[in-house]
Image 1 (cartoon, rainbow, N blue to C red):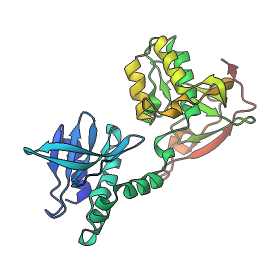
Image 2 (cartoon, rainbow, N blue to C red):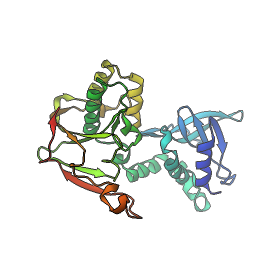
Image 3 (tube, one colour):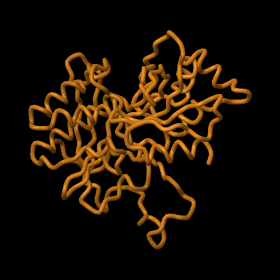
Image 4 (tube, rainbow, N blue to C red):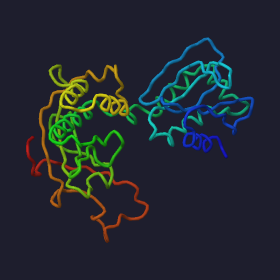
Length: 299
């Protein structure tokens, strides 16, 4: 079993505690750790430096741990979002890989922040953290729906096919900060496909000191009965943890439209193909729709 496979197996089977990674030699050890705070890998860090870096749902930090009756200082790479453990294992494998003659491990221990900055730049913030105006738009729609139905779920935080799900309806939310035009990008052949009634909400916003922020919408949702701990956890999963300055950025709503995604609405789904079957080897279909000219209601 290779390092990556062993890490993935440990992430799946370890509940709480630490396990040595057997794929590594005793000269360059590392371990998998898992707790209520998340999961990751740890390397002994015999250094006076203290490190604490955070990026979206991942952390690089130093901490003293008592393992096997011995307290040592460790350099830890951890993720808090359980749904990403399969993908995060790849980053962990590269993190603990010794390299030829241990050169990668030596470079890591000599300058952990250099490794961190390279990976953060490679992964890019856009992968983990969406633009604040798009989150605000979803929260505005969520609040609008939640007032009338408290069973509504914000499924976008779990990378669901649709942004918001209800017992009877599904909802997709699109937003823009462009002053003109109303084109939207559909990323995937499932986004406008639903067994339930599907509605598309479109919001046009602009950054403004008199607008609303993520924190403003959080407070509005809580005042309307939404669970405070739940909304904080959902924002954390999107990369907007409590205390983040970007949660104070304000946007003013310029326009709000609602569309019925029915048979008349332009879309590409499996029914668009012969025998209702998407051709083999077509993994994802991405396309752009111009909403101008389509029938909508203002909400």
